[in-house]
Length: 448
Image (cartoon, rainbow, N blue to C red):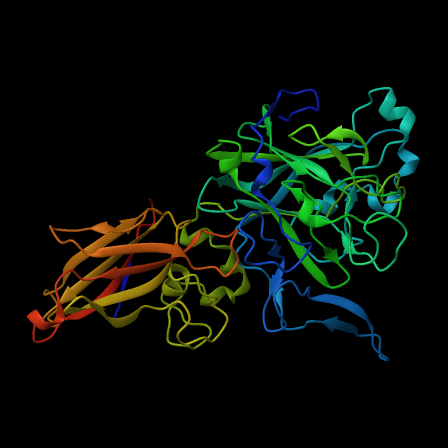
């Protein structure tokens, strides 16, 4: 179908490869919450919508009639995520088990969508000084994603802990710092061999059991971003950092924060230590971004009525059928007449003026071809291809034409790159033709 759019399981003892560390001078790294312009690890909101990025839609109590009171009722789970952790492969907290409350020892709590609920977590458990000195391994959890995650542009998956901004001056950086229990992240393409993300921890001293730390001192360590008390932000990870093109499993390895464990550069890692109850790293969710997709598997279809999921349907009544909502990274349930749709403008270059078409594409869509075409007549058979790209690849010139094609990120968050802003400038100046029409043709291949 096309539309034309005019103007088993790995054990803890399995091999772990440590990737080369990033340069120490790369920071400062991102703050604990909303920091969209940070070029290193800009946090990713778990929720978005009219109440603002990172504002979780959560139950905030009950009214007088026993009905739930909802904070941020118009917000929704960030549609950027195409795959969540779907299966617990292994959960190995350190002994003794009584250090972890039973309410925080269910690994299934780490599955599925982020909830922004700081009690909906599984704890990996902290370790005491004797266990650390004995060389006991820290707590781990290994999860399998709902679908493979690939190395695409920008961050490929996001880890959500339940850190929060400290309101006290117990120790560490004091009020305003983040109470963050940190963990290493390891990934695998086969569930057997894992590679650890390079990491940086520049925290200068111990934080104490209830202290806070400075998130800008931390890189590629899960847990540095807040996800509690109504704020929901996760830590992004880019597979380019470990040289893997595709993964199916993610392992989280707790870091007891007394300084006995090191980052990728050999620096001691400090975080609040020692903690109990929900001690150690508390995993809330893992969201996969870079999952290749066909229309039939598009997660946003689940948000639509069963009889409104066809490519030709328009459930939100904004005149844009579902296929184009999919192609241009829009929300099929939200009435938004223009967002992401092709825009035509005139661009001056030297003495000539050229037509330039801009639109958004999603490099995760394996079943789509985007083709920019022009016509001088608008006749049904009179359209000529100017540029084309398919199966997630960038557009390239067609048929001897030499348009100027530029792709940049379409996301306001620096760590996100899978949504692409595409501009295609015609190579023929407008002055050479009486008229020239342009369109973007979207073609879907159900078996890419």
